[in-house]
Image 1: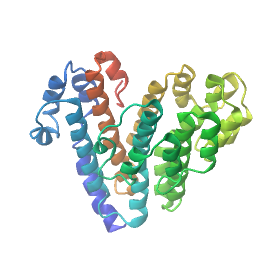
Image 2 (image 1 turned 90 degrees about the vertical axis):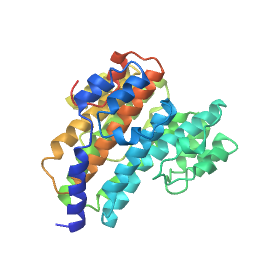
Image 3 (image 1 turned 30 degrees about the vertical axis):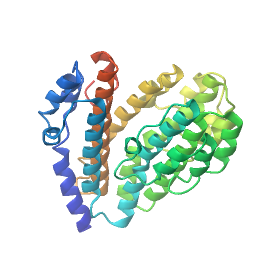
Image 4 (image 1 turned 90 degrees about the horizontal axis):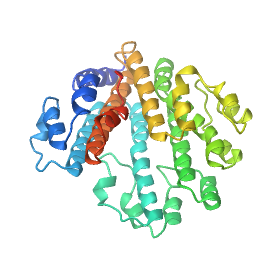
Length: 340
């Protein structure tokens, strides 16, 4: 047993006790009628100490607070990990940089003004957001995505020039992201690799399903979809999705495991937000199954990091939902919880 992993796993067990129970997130936090009420419920959680320094209760300040807590937790949970595990966590965290880059690119295309630099950047960010913000036009920003650490493939630029759609860039970034994580997982011990891919595998499968469904919904060519697919099989072979492609869903649905079908149906109904939520709930269930099996392992540590991510995303969704005036029912439908 690697002593560094043992220490880190012990910290992860402690941090699991800090997480807000799903029932409390759904009932109390998700039912808040105002940001002030939301904050009052948060005072009953491990966020109470951070909230004591909060001035005005605003969406911007809450997002900043939640981001700080998440970043601090990730830093603590990954502290002292052996290099191969630390590299995996560092590359996993690039998903947050990708989300920020896509927001900046969307703003450039629409002509919407950018926010302050710190809105996009996390303490663990690995990319130069000041450079992205300063890019004079969308294409110059896209060319910057070819460089490390995002390392998007060059043919994505050709596809962007042909289709001029954000979808192509996002899929190109995510394809490079998942291919990198798959490669890094190959360096992990067998049991660890299997558990890690039990967490990431459904995410990759469902992304491939969404890509394969795209042509029948949005009219772009199946050849584009085939170029975007992630070359990996967890439960669904990527190649088979395109080999059985038809301009209707029945042939494809036959390839999809039952647990993925609610997600696929949401994509087919163009309810992408619902599909993402259902995907994360599915991954949450996988994580909760894995944790008891490998209590002293990197898989346990990574599972807790993912649970911290889901809590962070839940709190952001609630705060934004309240600010937008969404109903409690709608906000709860967006939450990544294991009690529905």
